[in-house]
Length: 110
Image 1 (cartoon, helix red, strand yellow):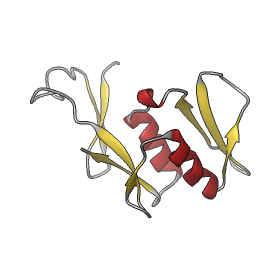
Image 2 (cartoon, rainbow, N blue to C red):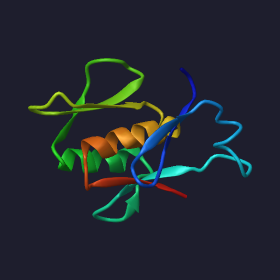
Image 3 (cartoon, rainbow, N blue to C red):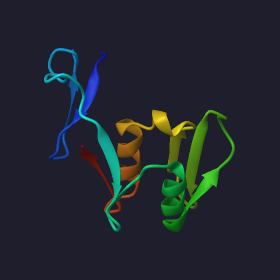
Image 4 (cartoon, helix red, strand yellow):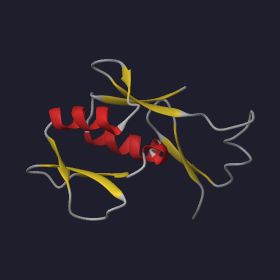
């Protein structure tokens, strides 16, 4: 099965088999941003994201893939893996952060 997972505003998701035909109507994709809810600030760099995650008890995880930027939470099996280049940071990574940090982050369309 291949396609694109679409996350709806009500928190559900579905697989779209042909994203070019149905999901991208209107000339393009909707861009998503990760928002830090306590400040209302859009996460626009790994520097800001790292500062927030460390404040929430996450630690940099240096073992593993050199192409990844990773965080681990002590006493937990959770690991956040992000692409080394911020330009490749997309909604898949954003939703991973939201799931592992409920009530702190939210993904929004712009």
